[in-house]
Image (cartoon, rainbow, N blue to C red):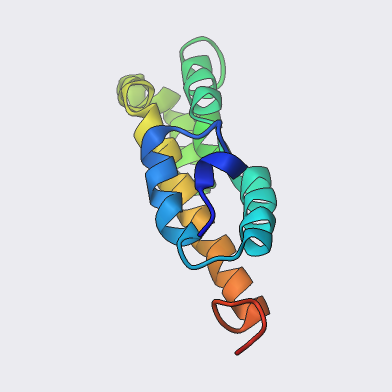
Amino acid sequence: MPNVFNFMPELEPDEMSYLQGIFNNMSDQEAQQFATIYRARRRDPLLILITAAIGFFGVAGVHRFILGSIGMGLLYLFTGGLCFIGTIIDVVNYKRLAFEYNVKEAQQVHAMMMGQYGGTNGYGV
């Protein structure tokens, strides 16, 4: 059973504990492949914080576009971050926004890998 810390030490503790549950049924090779794909897809909470803060001084909603919430991004863009209230809430909750996005991406990567391997041992058996 691979340890997620060995593959991705840069993760937040809550994200690391979630991913450890996914790693429990993987071989080291599968865990390495998962880590490579997931690292390319995940969003760093600091990136979300910075882009949400840009909403105060520039274009509101950039962080929502980065998180794949195109509808909310457009709403924030046209309403000035819902008159800055939504932007303030998102600045406070930036870690939760990043965690929810990253969990969704981890589930998609895991499902893709299970479809590729056809099982949990990597050999379709």
